Image 1: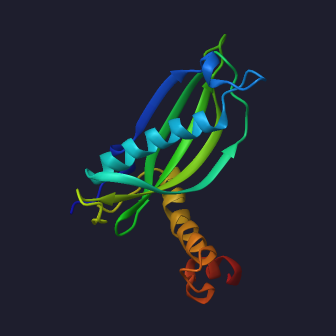
Image 2: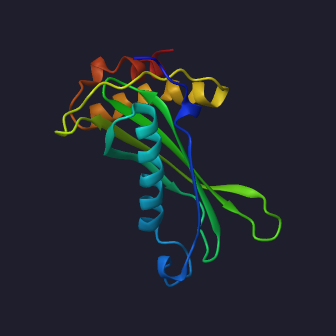
Image 3: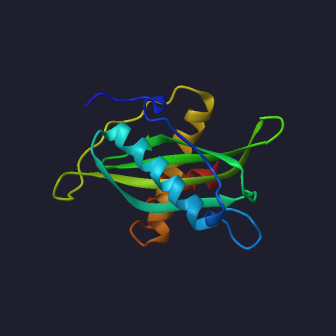
Length: 170
């Protein structure tokens, strides 16, 4: 299986925030943003694996800025690292200034997807070869994030989390 670069999976979804998608303060519902992020991330995971993919976990979400009614929202997703059957997808959410057109980051998230066959059983995925400095940074961090999630879930002993231990012993 040939490794792939993160840009092969890059997915960009751009949409407008409509009145039915906002809370009483006139801002995009968090759940609506989560759904948009999930869609973009699933497309990125499918592009990388070329398989059916399912959301395994939402590892991190940061709602850093409110997104107002009428805003143009862009969700960018791409694979940061692949493991045996799972893929970490990093998502950046941007809003566009109505007058200047400049984009600024509003939110971010990290999801994990698993590639499956037609019976829903996990299947191997290609590895990722990061190219840019940011991709390399996210790639390196993915193993620490995975180990932390496994330790918290009780699926890995803290003593076996070598990448996490290295953070505290250097």
